[in-house]
Length: 79
Image 1 (cartoon, rainbow, N blue to C red):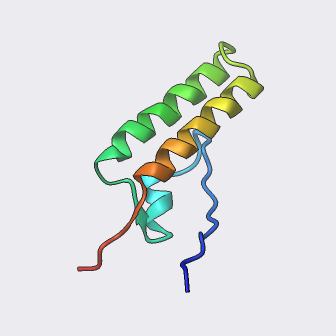
Image 2 (cartoon, rainbow, N blue to C red):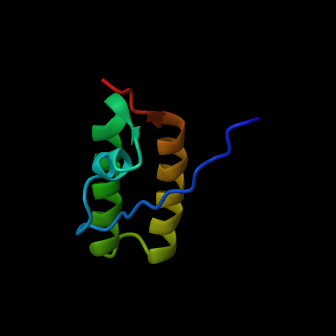
């Protein structure tokens, strides 16, 4: 039996917890890439808030960030 992908919800707005914290709630981690992903999330939000990126453009950037995060995600190892 193959493992089926689990669907999780991640929120990107500035009022939401850091990405790593949100993933940890699902037993996942970005490991050493957590800071990089968080910095990208903040940059995308700044571009959107300042009007440099449209909502559509920021959504496309978030889609890319999600794909990047998916390639970094791994299950947290129990201690």
